[in-house]
Amino acid sequence: MTTTTAAVAGPAGAASVPRAAGFLDSLRSEWTKARTVPFTLWNLLAATVLGIGIGALISALAAHQYPKATALVRAQWDPTSTSGAGLSMAQLAIGVLGILIVTSEYSTGAIRSSLAAVPRRGRFLVAKAVVVLALSFAVTELIAFTAFFIGQALISGHAPTAALGQPHVLRALVGCGLYGALVGLLGLALGTLLRHAAGAITVLVALLFVLPGIAAALPASIEHTVEKFWPTQAGQQVTVVVRTAHTLPPWTGLGVLALFVAIVAAAALSVLIRRDT
Amino acid sequence: MPRKSAYQPAKGQLIEARDLTKRYGATLAIDDLSFDVRPGLVTGFIGPNGSGKTTTMRLILGLDSPTNGEVTVGGKRYRDLPAPLREVGALIDAKAVHPSRTAYHHLLSLAQSNHIPTSRVHDVLGIVGMESAAGRRVGGFSLGMFQRLGIAAALLGDPPVLMFDEPLNGLDPEGIVWVRQLMRSLAAEGRTVFVSSHLMNEMAVTADHLIVIGRGRLLRDEGVSDFVESSSQRWVLVRSPQLNELSTLLKAAGAQVRVGTEESIEVTGPDSSAIGDLAAANGLTLHELATQRPSLEDAFMDLTRDSVAFRAGEAAS
Image 1: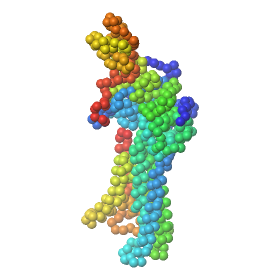
Image 2 (image 1 turned 120 degrees about the vertical axis):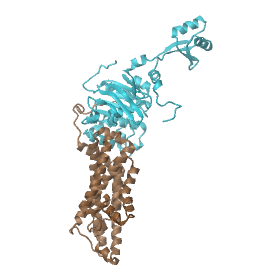
Image 3 (image 1 turned 60 degrees about the vertical axis):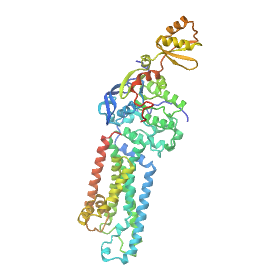
Image 4 (image 1 turned 90 degrees about the horizontal axis):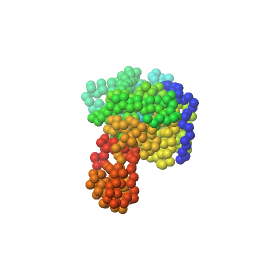
């Protein structure tokens, strides 16, 4: 390695009049960080493959079951959520991306150079949140629309299909992106609170899958209330066209999830501001 | 106080610590520490392991919050600096970089966060001699390359204040000389240079001024030469073909005698003329009689003997 003792000074006057760094500078920096670690690409890829693949699989299976289905099943037939069934797996990859975006900084120690560069911790976390929201929303929308068109093509000829022009269909597809964005933000907040990927992923899996499963074992009256208001299940109502029993209306459901994520994010912000690094 | 002729107060900024105290649970890491780090000088920050050097630097950078007291840079708390990398460049933990990121992207993300032009990333990679490694993922770097990358990050904002925590770790002799010259030239430009190290002999040739701490308390705040002079550690190196007889006589006279290298003894207590007189009076031949000035390391060991947090033989921490 060559050693130079070249002048250290930068562009004339660079240091003499420091220009205040702003939120957009933090955002640009966080975007550079997100796009230069491999897990971002892998998680987005995993979400896309799971979301579209499982959606196509479920669509094909459900379409072939449809002719033999009961009247009740036919009455609740929702081709939009059938083709979007892969979202239930894709959301895990999206939530984990939100977690890794921050826990990778703690595990490598890079959080210290990040917070030395941006000591306003609120700005730091909000910039990260914007990056996570944008990535999560974009990939979930990509999955939702792609899975929709593939799924409807597979269903076509076997069962009634959905089209973008039908009532609530476009709302459900756009809703997928909003739901995915909130799950990504939830991951970021959990990662910030817990600082370790393993712990944060455990909590995320519990919130998304395990606890709703346990609720199913409760007496019916309690189960229905839990099912209705459990944040992630409530949030998913914005992605369905045919509303089932014991669920909130789409936007109310999304509101419940948004409120829950906002509370976790506020806790994460408050802890980050107070905590030693 | 040693002051450099190139002293340019306008360029540097003062680091001021006042009654700085930091407690982690039951551990008092920093205990009522007050000091100034002045521009135009290389100020060495020394103390045994666990004495609070890194903690102090983290408090300066606002990474940790003090339990009591405060520390400012140019009169402002670090968290209030509008573009901190343009005012304070710091190397705290060189390996604290995501291993999958390239050196260039690591520096780019830091530059962007403080609105520093991208061209400056290329400049600092050139300054530390890492242009050819810019596109490599840092996971494969040697410790010496991490140190160079960390120094590049510190220089990124062309800041008037620089802090380096153990910058020499992992550097080869050429790298050590380079860092020494870099620190000297940064100070000569009027910048404030605050550098911790456990390599005392390196501090002796690099630093103008020393801040010495032990167990989180300030032990000394003075020029390097004053610090060495004030040390009580002095001894006389003696060579003689009749070492045994001489040792016996010296011990009888109340001197402390240690066996040195190559047929010599190291005598603490009487000065060289007293030892010479004693030898002459007893008809003993002397081949060498030399007063040993303490090195910075000796002075440091002497001072911190009572404030070492972790000592060999104690439970490893």
